[in-house]
Length: 130
Image (cartoon, rainbow, N blue to C red; front, side):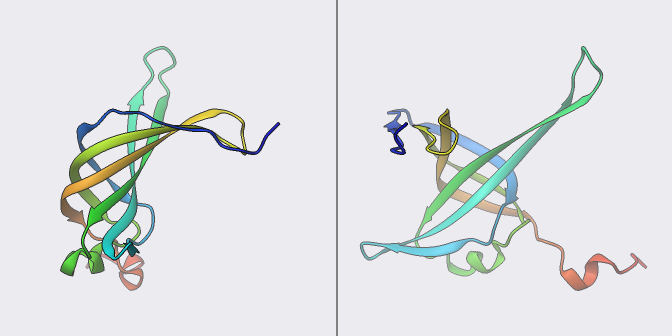
């Protein structure tokens, strides 16, 4: 088997709104002199399976980019922070070199970003609420 991953870029652009948690701290990157903010967001849905009565969950990950350096906002984009975002979505379909299965990657070019909550500070995690 070849270790070459085949990439197919779908020519579909959709508007998307998503609420989820950052998987890692956001990073400011530079490509050909243009700055952008890069981060990943996870959205988890939970529901009860009617047939079994068991709680089922599914997590969707999105790779997000936002033009510019993020201004003052970047300092708050830390792992675990809940965000609302709005932007355009594209999907990459590829054959994984590791699993040899077809997989899809969700990419969002963010136009609007709002903080819904911040990551709890480590020192406050174990303190009683009084």
